[in-house]
Image (cartoon, rainbow, N blue to C red; front, side, top):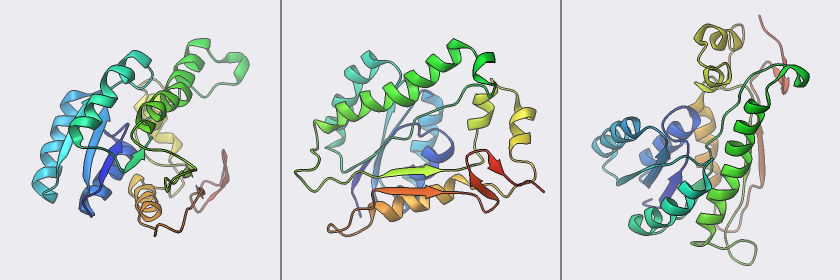
Length: 210
């Protein structure tokens, strides 16, 4: 389709699979993440496999100065933007509030809330919202098997693995399929909200494990 897609948090998990889905669909992708080596490897892989353009951007969305300095020049060099997949996010810890650390909470707020705000504000200078044909969709996945839990547990791979034991968890490519479907709808149709759960998941932490 040769649209221009900007994906944050694109070095692993849902972000990586979203970028891959768009690349397979013939779109050019601007991929952002904190790991330059991963971005370079993904760029080489996608360009060889799919014959599309891949630009990379080393970016920490939690740092406003990083976003302000880098996002606009990257989009200008990319030739504009049609779709933003504002995916970058993380979780830290799983303790009850009274036992959790303020540092973990601040890290999550800086990335998941402020990071989303910073990137959206930077990108909107290349778009507009309700007065135009720009669409906004919130996609809320349930339990997805990605490195997300390893980050949550500060690198404890065994504890992260236990999160997905006994349940057929959503895979990142499942979420990417939904993202691609949403963005491929005709101009007249906007899908404003999508909730995706694993088959054994009712909501949030309400999960049945075998």
